[in-house]
Image (tube, rainbow, N blue to C red; front, side):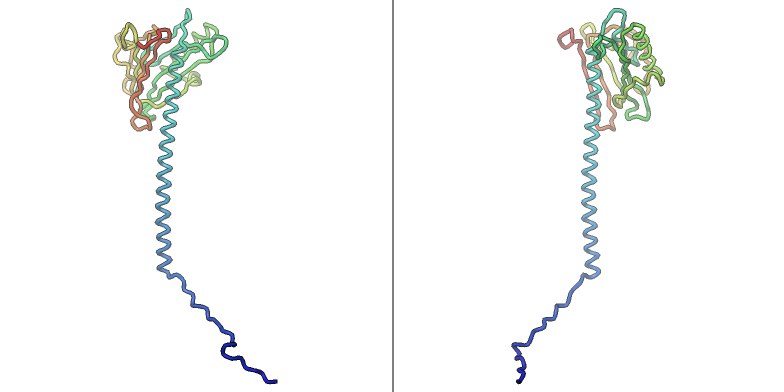
Amino acid sequence: MDRKHPTQAQRPRFVHPSKAHGFTLIEVLVAISVMALMSLMAWRGIDGMLRSQSGMQQRADDIRTLQAGLAQWQTDLDQLSELPGTTSWHWDGQVLRLTRRANAPDEALQVVAWTWRGNPGRPGGGDWQRWQSAPLSLRADWQNAWALAGQWGQTPTEATRSGQVQIHPLAGWQIFVHRGGSWTNPLSSAGAGDTTLTPQNAGLASGSTSDQPDGVRLLLTLPGDQAVTGTITRDWVRPVLGGSP
């Protein structure tokens, strides 16, 4: 039996694969350079967003702490107590001492104190600080706490610092009182000058007054290099007056 040779049409066709082309060294270097540039641009964008977010967070934190301090200042003045035999208000140019009703069900009293304390290491050169005692029920305990508050305002010790809270960095503060229908310097009756306290004149004021005023004006000078700057004014009026001075 004769074998038939396959015709040209029946023969299998072999397709040769096309020759593969790779990237040249120059193309690889260009691609790497482009990707590095894009990564750098993305990193700068992310870094800018993080810095902006951090600045906004810092500003929000500063505002919250300042608002908390002002709210506490308002509460202390609103809760002033004028029980016989106690002093409700005393300002000596360095520290403001107050006797207020404590947040306790037994009608206890509490001594609180506010001051601006110079500190060259802090923004603005100092801090706004508050001190408070434990709730007091005995007159002897009140007298001791009143003396400790004065000591804390002038020369703090380890014992008195236990009741201290650092409110906010300040460049200085001023206090004015409302008496006799006008705003006056709280030390004017003692012949003292300006009550602005700064690193240069802190502790130099003299004289004192213990008469509870009809109103108190607080001026806080914030450091210029902080998230919140400028001067804040806060007025307080004795609730019994029923109107603004």
